[in-house]
Amino acid sequence: MTMTVIEKILAAHSGRDQVSPGEIVDVVIDARVARDFGGANVVKHLEDNQLSLDDTSRTFFTFDCNPTGSDQKYAANQHKCRMFAQREGIKVYDIDKGIGTHILMEEGLSYPGSTAISTDSHANILGAVGAFGQGMGDKDIAVAWHKGKTWFKVPPTVKVVLEGSPDEHLTAKDIALNLLQTFGASTLLGTAIEIEGEVVEMFSLDQRITISSMATEMGAIIILFTPNKEVVRYCESRTKMKVDPVIADADANYKEVYRLDVSKFSSRISLPGKPHDTSAIPEGKIWIDSAFVGSCTNGRIEDLRATAAILAGRHVAEGVVLKIVPATDRVWQACMEEGLLEIFKSAGALISNAGCAGCAAGQVGQNGPGEITVSTGNRNFPGKQGQGEVYLASPSVVAASAVAGYICSPDTVPETPEKRPARSKDDSAGQKMVKELKNRGLRPSKIEGRAWYIPMDNIDTDMIFHNRHLSITEIEEMGQFTFGNLEGYEDFAKKVKPGDIVVCGKNFGSGSSRQQAVDCFISLGVQCVLAESFGAIYERNAINAAFPIMESDHIASLHLEEGDLISLDFTTGVIRNLTKQITIESAPFSDVQMEIYQNNGLF
Image (tube, rainbow, N blue to C red; front, side):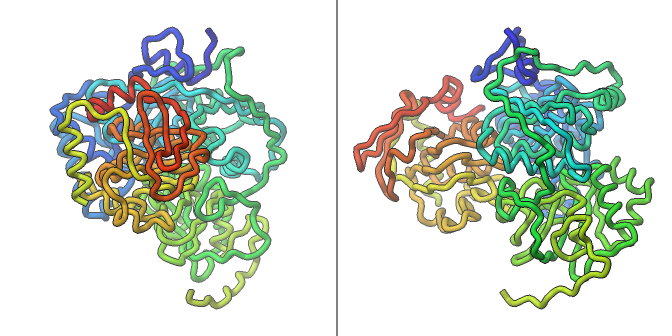
């Protein structure tokens, strides 16, 4: 049987000669990582369940969300992880190192054909070197630390062939935004994407990292590149061993093959709220208050060189704050050696130590209410990078905009800055229910409850459970913040009742790998979430927490109204609107989902 890249990697790490899409396999994990976000919960799970560690040489902490420890709870969680690491002999890449997924490549821990998991939803960035990387919740990570492996459903693979010659000014971020414009947030949901083509062969590692880092925003499991000679040499220099890339069979079976002409791609920005809602750079002026260059998407040395090329001999516009955060300390050191830091400082930029920065509520990059930011990050969900509005763009566009004071391309930066126009002013009952369920033994395979119908697609984890609450580790405290960042449903936690069933549209739970976005529903006593489809990491987190989720393409056929009584049968997949006597069918729980559900969780 012929296989795609993802199928070959998963087969090799599960002791199988071959695997097929839809199969569930136990995958040995080469690098098992917890960050300062989620790390303390991983430790808690291990200690509460008295779990040992499988192999400390493959087990790591990376502190990249808040590498300054400027938040008291983050500082406490980092200290807890350090103490655990000292006791167990675990390597810690501490606050001076940078973004964990980048560290895995720099330190030779991830390389072509290898596997890695992290509490980072962008661990799939490792597809840039032809490795399998996945963001997972803290329960998943804890079990992988204990067993050395975890279950995974083999995804279908699609192939994207990039044809033609791109414009010389087109950046990797532009390519990523054009892909988002083409496919949106859910067309390729749950798939592994292989990108190939003559132009792809010329992509540098930094360019591949930028594109791979936005697989999550496309709803995909991972974007995989077959390593070229440059990437192979890089990985061999880091691993100190010979590296053999994993290559798809010539007659591998793909779910779909897409051919896109990159000569038609253009420089783009993402409009606030949705990374896939992209636009050409507007002719009218969108004045900005701040600009950010960094993140796992655009914090590499090539990104910062492009930024410096725009800033050299110029200064940030009056009233604009420019924040620059290298991805890793190696990149930071390279900036210093090449004189880029001097250029940044002379231009009036704020430079921070390496880390995730704004999009992880980290050391710099957050904005305030009413603030307009242009950012090189990968997400601009409401509230993700602060309370203001965030546009996504390439480093060149961000740097040009910081100088101009409004969003613009590098070739339209005015010689003399324009003066900006004046601006106008613009419950405990749920926990009781959970405990009762845990004490009943066999859990019900059929449930009934009142429907909370929220007919919206792409409800991401920041809308479900905002990142400003990520330091909360007790489930009892989480419920009060559920949907606190979802417009129109900010009072959900006060109105929902134990036993209710939440019903939503496509791609529910897209975004970050945070377990709290599942646990907050458990805290409130919500029985289940029914959606047309789920984000891949969210689906795993819910299953592993024994929180029931079901999906169906035919939810609209139920003709739901707020308060309708519905029933769901996890064994048969039958869903009924009992109020209107309408029945639809969906996929029942898989054997793995039912086993974990009846076990009250992965542990």
